[in-house]
Amino acid sequence: MIRERHLFGPGPSNPYPEATRALAEPLLGHLDPEFLRVMDETCDMLRTVWGTENSRTLPLSATGSAGMEAAFVNTVHPGDVVVVAVNGLFGQRMTDVAARCGAEVVAVEHEWGQPVDVERVLAAHDSPAIIAAVHAETSTGVRSDIAALGAGKGDALLVTDAVTSIAGIELRADDWGVDIGYAGTQKCLGVAPGLAPFTINDRAFERRVEKPQSWYLDLGMLGGYVGEAASKGGQRTYHHTAPTAMVASLHAGLTRILDEGLEAVWTRHQAAGDELQAGLEAMGLELFAAEGSRLPELTTVKVPEGVDSAAVRRELLERHGIEIGAGAGAYASTVWRIGLMGRNARPDAVLLVLAALQDVLGTSRG
Image 1 (tube, rainbow, N blue to C red):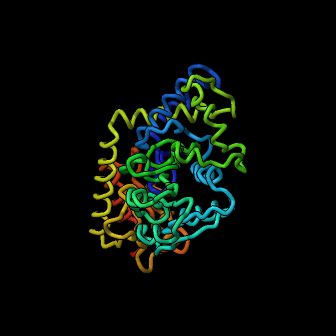
Image 2 (image 1 turned 135 degrees about the vertical axis):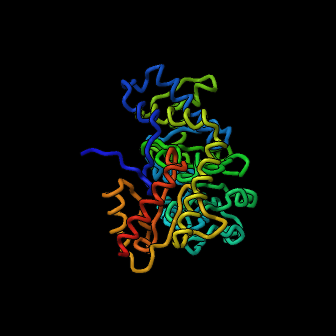
Image 3 (image 1 turned 120 degrees about the horizontal axis):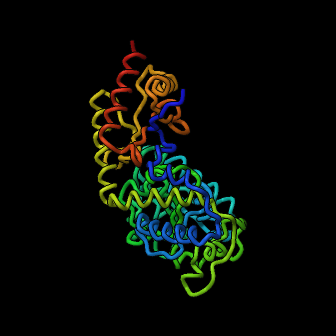
């Protein structure tokens, strides 16, 4: 029997109904004038959720990992020093991608569960070409201070991973000095995975690699594809066949968010996260992320001593239709990740996951 599953892990949250319906609409051709209008409006709405005026703001036709790849392949010249703040799995991944582009990577390691130490990162090298950090670390549930990194970056470009933060918590790319940002659609945007909301400012674009090692992710070619050339009096150029249904779905999801009001959406996520975390602690569970830096949209909690993490997650899914995520890396079996993202960031979802978890833990301990 097919049933709705409530997804509270770090993966896809249930899409908004509007975004789901958009996927079922008749397909438009990627050169259809109606699709080009939808694409232009989608880029405009992405500027709002990014907090930027960057003309080069677009949904890349791939998942958030391609956004990370695009950030580095377009800006890392061989031998460039790239300082990466590593406080979780996705900071680690940044070091790997940057190194594959020929960077001299300076990894500033942090204990997982702790926010980025801004002073240590800024002091790691006297003249880096790029400083990179994750705003909301999906593997640990920690928020880091991107604004402080932007204020102290000097001449370096600041690359920011906003996969889990966009449309969930405050994000102001221009005000914070973010030069390049990438995200995903499957978290707080509440849209199926498959696109990477991306933004790059003029300062970073002027320093880009002339011919990146990836033809597909070459931002110089993608500008005309999304209408940058058209907005400057030129012609839109063909680059690749756009995933038209996914763009239409993102357009619907963004419309829903902006109709609610971006700051209202942030407030809703914060309230849901606060309530969930208070409820978990009331149950006697210990939170993993450092107090004062906990994400509201992604809560990490320590698996109680003697409890089989995988068995609890399996029972939650089978008995209650709720999926929560395991931890990452060394914490795969000792931490749970509970996501309240998009439409799941609401009081009834909090009560549902708390009641189900209490039921399963009571059973597993009995």
